[in-house]
Image (cartoon, rainbow, N blue to C red; front, top):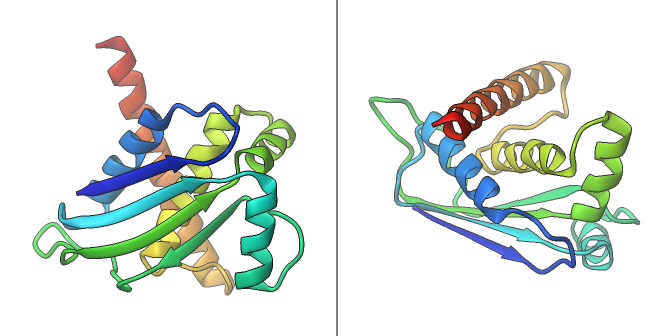
Length: 156
């Protein structure tokens, strides 16, 4: 599995956390170990350009996902085939502002946004209420499992 993380922003981010998160999420969703994903962190100006170009909306956003091979989550018996999942683009500055409002750390917000972006790469959406309930429940489950894993890791 290739998880490429490229921090093009000025923010200092612990990329190892995002790497472990993505590895754990992909394993939990039974995605092939031969699937590839890229995570790019960009400043507000670059995110604003992408947001306008791809979503036709002004201003920077927190996360954008660009699926490639339209892969979907697998099962234990039948994992997702190998392929290119796509790109997740994060804006740490927007994440920081959202984290302050939510009352948690910027890294916690980036964990949420990375998980959210990964679910979009795997075909999840939240345009309809049923889709939103399903996606956000899975998102909470994945984040809770990662937090538990990180707690175990820090006490080991």
